[in-house]
Image 1 (cartoon, rainbow, N blue to C red):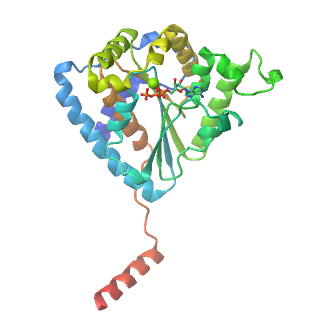
Image 2 (cartoon, rainbow, N blue to C red):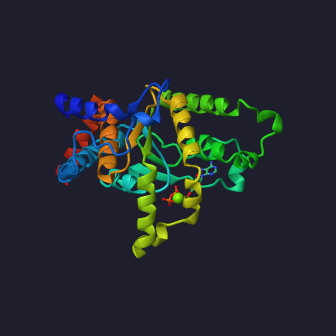
Image 3 (cartoon, rainbow, N blue to C red):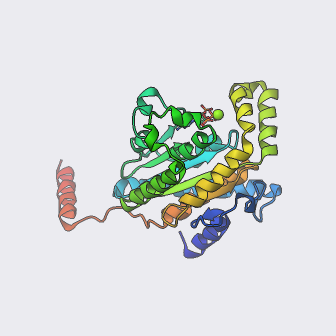
Length: 299
Ligand code: ATP
Ligand code: MG
């Protein structure tokens, strides 16, 4: 990628990247924002997305070949914000052998028998791999905070469940991410920021369109009643866990085409920073290759 291209992408996503949580306010980012792009530019946006996906495909090949780095993409959002579609688009060109997507639902009884990060740790991508978390350990600061009865199910000794528990978890998670980064895992966190009005529109569409009925869940409408508690929990989580090493991207999510473009651009931008390249062939290896060529030619 040329330097000027990189700078363009970097400035495109800069408004949505949070590297310092202190003072962060969710209301400073408009879910309906589409930067300088208008809906007439959708076709252009699609083309840019396609180029981003192509570039990611090349980068993934190098990531895999080099086997030094891993990439962890964390997706969090309210229901119907477009996590699934965004993941589908961004990974559309990726070699399935180099990528895993893990969806985290309510924990099983086996998972509840362990420390809360256990199930997430087991799914962190290996070197050379891209791992996508469709929901993540952030649920421990979101749904579990909004519905504290879920915390009671985690079987912790009461002496450990104090007023400080959320601060402790912010700290645990920030430290865990720091640990991953220090081990060569690129950690990028996306909050797809949809408005309450747009969520309602999408729920209605799921009710109206028979092909989308399967996506509708009455539980999602119940969760919507806790909208402001969730927004607060997201804001607090981002404030306490955004860092230069493991940034949050608060992505406007009322327009799906724009959400996908920002996410792809953010991944492209961050992976460019790894300066990936194919492994350099050592002199010994070059000798081996030459010998193999001779043998093949002699056949
Ligand atoms: P979709 O609805 O698009 O299929 P989803 O991610 O909403 O995707 P669901 O099966 O609807 O999947 O919901 C998963 C549920 O599991 C969410 O309500 C989420 O809050 C919950 N969940 C995830 N992690 C935890 C956790 N650690 N503790 C409790 N609940 C959790
Ligand atoms: Mg759901």
